[in-house]
Length: 131
Length: 131
DNA sequence: CAATAACCTATTGACACAGTAGGTAAATGG
DNA sequence: CCATTTACCTACTGTGTCAATAGGTTATTG
Image (cartoon, rainbow over all chains, first blue to last red; front, side, top):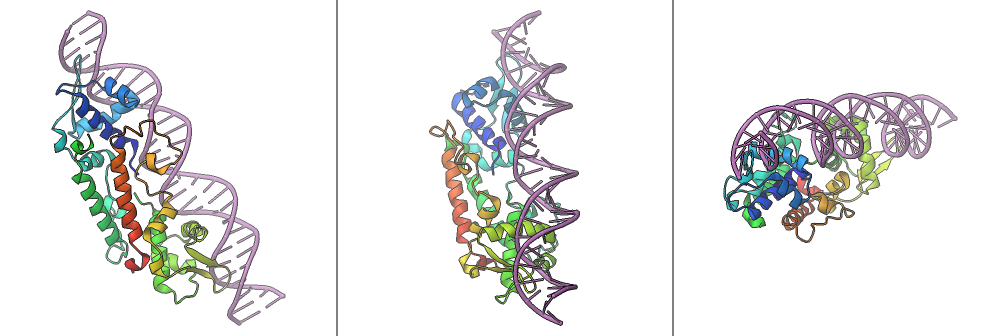
């Protein structure tokens, strides 16, 4: 299940794409338009800046803006940054997770096939496709 | 992320399919073969009986067995029973969740498309495909 | 220099996850 | 008929994540 972090992040990206003329958009405006607590958005947007999705600027006239054009962002990239991992099972999500049944596991191939499908779906979708 | 409930349930089904000649299989045997705590499996198997996936029998010679042939179970059915809902977002998982932005939401169509893809994937896969 | 806005640390309540513990009820093989 | 086997039942618990809230500091500019 995609959490609010992933969903809100996507909405922030869309909001900026729709409301910016290339300048910075204050978080206050985004929060009001999207009806999401500004305080909570701060946390989310912080991760987005750290992850290279947004650029922030302090002070008057500051705010956030996109680093690239909307068609250069994939939805998968955004979700993966916010949700941590898109993997369906621990066995595949955590590299440190050493499963002793790996070789004989009857379900692992299915999870792999599933993860690949999900990956293709979200990385095929671009931010520009949502606007 | 699929939890242990869904993953273990699937493994129990496969284990029974592989080790039963039509008779009941004691949970003790399944737990040992699968290296999962029997106590924890009890909880999972209880839900599976309630959900019509397995049939249980008490006493000596008792245990669990499948209700149908492996090709009559879809993986989706098993996972949905154990995980509650396969939906990607609250907006679609919870019927009582009334989103005010439903009509104008730019992301909803994507979640719907995604859910449909996931549904088709897991309901298309049969238990017999995993053996 | 005051207003604006990002940025930072800490805390919280609710809930789910992954079990553990200890017992009762039912069925059967000897 | 009874001891053994097995399912079935209720309750509890530690750990962690989710979704925020609270209150502050730093940077920038009109």
